[in-house]
Image 1 (cartoon, helix red, strand yellow):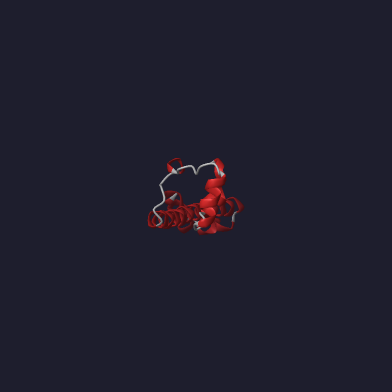
Image 2 (cartoon, rainbow, N blue to C red):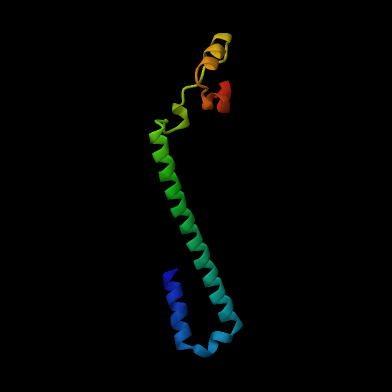
Length: 101
């Protein structure tokens, strides 16, 4: 991509009268679109990396497992389980995921 942009700039400097030609303008516009989309993708990847790092730090602070396969499935609710759960602080994961995880 850098070589293509450099060649476009060099061509512009060598042939300034061709700048107004429609094919050249189309070419420059397509180069601009490629560069803009590439920059957007790179920005998205950098943002993802920051978000993933933040998520991993929070997960470690909460002492959560790294993968969902490491989650221990809660027991199916029984009368005794319900009574014990209602007497202690509710587990938000239990209510979110339910007994079928």
